[in-house]
Amino acid sequence: MRHQTRFPRTALTALVFAAAALTMHADEGIPEITSFEPTPLEQKIFDGPGVTVMRGEDIYSTLCAGCHMPEGEGAVGGGMYPALAGNEKLEYPDYAVFIVLNGYKAMPSFAHTLSDEQVAAVVNYLQSGLGGNSYEPAATAEQAELSRPQ
Image (cartoon, rainbow, N blue to C red; front, side):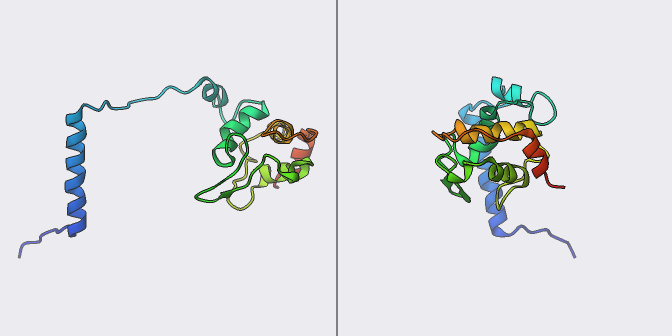
């Protein structure tokens, strides 16, 4: 008795369409992307192990803006990303320092990514530079050190 491997009809159909799509793209002369050049900011940020920039604005634009949006306006999509612009919880730095270091709900912890100085810098940016926030920047590296998870 001969053993025959059979693909389910949907898998076979998917293979046929994938082969056709590859053939069409090859015929259309679409160039292959083989590499990309990082922006100057990306080069600066990832110039070594971990995040190497120290300015709060640079840290925010790299690690936070993808979810909380460039001006801190927040978003709803695959999850809910609260607005940071105009957020009263940022008046005092303790809350933001704790959340940045420990995470909350879908937000990851950045304790293993950012130094105490970087945490203070990004929280100070949230307080006084993001989206019109005008709270007095008051986060310190010592505060971040005390809020780190053990």
